[in-house]
Length: 77
Image (tube, rainbow, N blue to C red; front, side, top):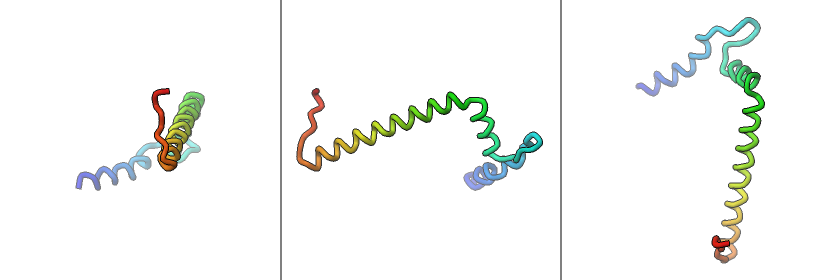
């Protein structure tokens, strides 16, 4: 029961806040202001996350390829 109330509150909450004139009361409006105020910082964090994800995927693929070919990976180098 508590989970249903929480879900209902999160769905209704955006419409309980009054936005300034010319804007809609939605999480998208809040996100727009967040990007407007902190866009450069968020951009750097996003780029860093993409780089880390790409490196993780490349490492994962390297381990799978070595295992599939029957080679043991030498982690001592």
